[in-house]
Image (spheres, rainbow, N blue to C red):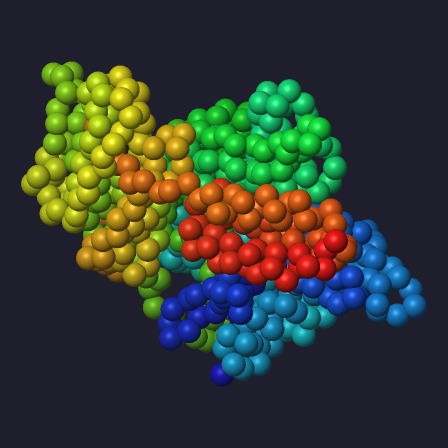
Length: 593
Ligand code: AMP
């Protein structure tokens, strides 16, 4: 029996998944990443690049790179790419399905490497609104890539399959798909293995990229306010700002604040100008709320086309990377009066569903889809404002029980008394409202908070719970960057089937209905300001202008990566890059002048 893969050929990212031993999983590339950016290009030697490598050069070499080709599928739009080194003609043109075939070919290769066997059959997904011409172009792309296309499957159907919705009863499911460049909402009716798309609406010019651009403008405005001048309007600087914006956006999905440290964005005379600030989740939410309101209108249109009311829906499914944004989840939930189902990573569900369908088509045995959840709520002891006054020792839940792992959440706390210099963070797991009644997991003290009025020092407590059951607690004092960390590794993981999960969620909803404002404790552990690193960056910047093109490009890339790692507080990456930068300076400096 040959094995067949499922492929989500997305506008921004694509994935390939397989059913193995009754379980479905997305196959990683050699770099360990599950998502392959849907980006194709040629490097300056004429070498074909697909995925992350192509995306990396997109800003610097737009004439050699193409993104979002999916928007053109089924048309005869020609993409002209400069491809020096590949013969006498320096440019070549490609039809949309030819570019898509390159992405599919890369995914086929990825699957073959991961599985150590040839892969020749696939189910490929397309948006529900795709016309016949667009579907045919997708099929042709698959065939060009060397795949027998077993089925072209609608994305909302695939997403629904990933949630194990093959019940014999008829279910009406609303699939809200917000990706990088497109938004789709579909209402599907599923009975057993039969799925009908009742209505589908969307906007193929709305997605996470728009959020990035809004945040980019916001960052530029902060820079202007700080330095009294605009950020230089050259493509490289603007591309850096846009990349920073995306990074900040992703951080804000799990953190209340995101630090911004973009060095050398411009200069005034001989002084280099940096952007050092902090973006609050609420700032970001204000920027994107109008765009999200448009998506709610599309929901209403889809429902009315399907002749249904919100109450008629059995489930709501969120698909696409941008649905990781908490405000998206909140607005959809508030609008429809029903919480979306969870259990599958929103950007992987389409690929997983496609793989399940491929598995069914080639006769694989498929068990119930299992998901990993945390068995107990995790939180800290804090004081809470209640109508009867401040109640200390309350169990403030940060990650609720039954959240699907991996999961990251944070809450913001404030100091309780004037000039509070010390804060004790105590971590518990359990379901009791009184912290002490739960199981203690660890604690630590933060000392040396600066004198300030009560409530004026805000501390974000961030919980990261990984696939291995390790809880990492990080605390950040607002406006001061990363400050402290504690790891706890006996919090455990439990496996539930998706229907058990559903039941468990309903039970939990009944338990947790109140939503208090929390005040209480916070943490601070000092991290010395890294003078050595600052010095390295400054020397690198001075060196840049005197280097030959290729070396300068390499150094700029290194500096960019370092800034991003610093902004994301990825300590391990920062030290690696610091070492690389130090080596670079050591070898490059003698030849520079
Ligand atoms: P997709 O097309 O489903 O791969 O979604 C890609 C979009 O999701 C891009 O705009 C990403 O920036 C965005 N995205 C991915 N992860 C997150 C996250 N954690 N928070 C916010 N946006 C995200």
